[in-house]
Structures are given as structure tokens and as C-alpha cells.
Image 1 (cartoon, rainbow, N blue to C red):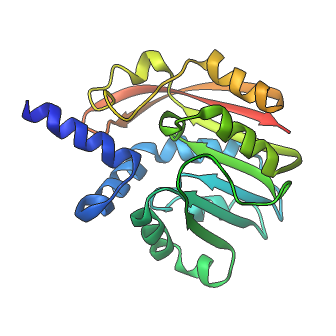
Image 2: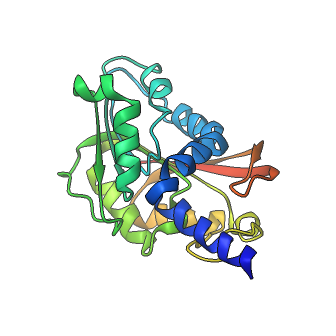
Length: 219
């Protein structure tokens, strides 16, 4: 029973890190998801002066890599965790001070307060599982992207994700075809999917060979 309780608490923390263990959770997520995040950034093919939105940035330790890919980038990150907003600001103070990056807390409903056609690129990794109404999120992302804007989404499929011991609550997984429908219904075109396999450390400390997908669409 104690093990189930621990996994339930871990699931909640992975959805929204909070409290005294938030920093540790954020660091662990960056360690286990770093390669996935960097691969997702590469899939954006960022150009100079790109205007980027990220959904669910965690502790933000990947931003130096992102800003090294092109010049004069502008970045906005949104996350439901107040603790991760604070961590990301602390980890990227020079970028925040110069106005190149900003981090905001949101309610996670999928509603985006930004005007239409604000961003040239949007990306997110391992957040889809926590979207209560996924189609609303995809529709909102499509709206705030500029014409020809790029959206990249990284995730693990249902057949893998549901086998993990800490995903019995809080998580909802999908197969590739379901996510492609969300993209298409939102209006994205030229969608393509890449499959990767990596060795990483699972959130419960176990080493796993994790397959993940990156689905990319153009507005």
C-alpha cells in the first residue's frame, strides 16, 4: 500500500511540481527528459529572430541550448507550476533580465491569452498527458502561431506510457494516430512524425529504453 501511495504522490508532482520537493522533481525531470527536449528543439529548425512559445518548461535548464541554435530569439514559457516558474527564472536570470525570455504561470485549461499569430514556433515535451481537453490545447496553439508557424510535440505512446508504475493516476496517454487527429482537426498541415529510442532514467529511478515520438506540424 505504501508503494502505491508513493507512486500516486509522484504522479501529482510530475504533473505539477510543488512544495519542498519541487526543485528535486524539476532536476529529475530535466535529467530524464533532457535528450527529448533537445531533440524537440532541433526539430523546430529555428531561425534568427524566431518568436518561441514553450508549454511546460520545467526548471528551464534547457534554455541555454535553445538560445545557442539561432540569434535574436524571443522566448515565452508557460507552466502550471509556480515552483517551476520560480526555478526557471532563477536558472535563466540573464535571459530574463535582458527581456529575451519570460516565464508565466497558467491554469492549464488550454486557453492562451496571447493574440492571434504571435509566435513563429511552439513546442512542448511530455505535457500532452495532463491536458484535460486536448483538442482545445491544439486549437489554441494553432491560433497563436503565425502563418507557416511550426508546432513540435514530443510524447510517449499509450502502449509504453501505461506500463510505467507511476502513471496510474494523473496521466492520459494516446497513440500516434490519435494525436495526429488532434493536429489535423486544429488545422495543421504538412504534419510528420519521427520516432526515437533512448536510454534514460525513469521517474522512479529505473533505467529504461524509452521510445518517444515527435510530431511536427505547420500552420
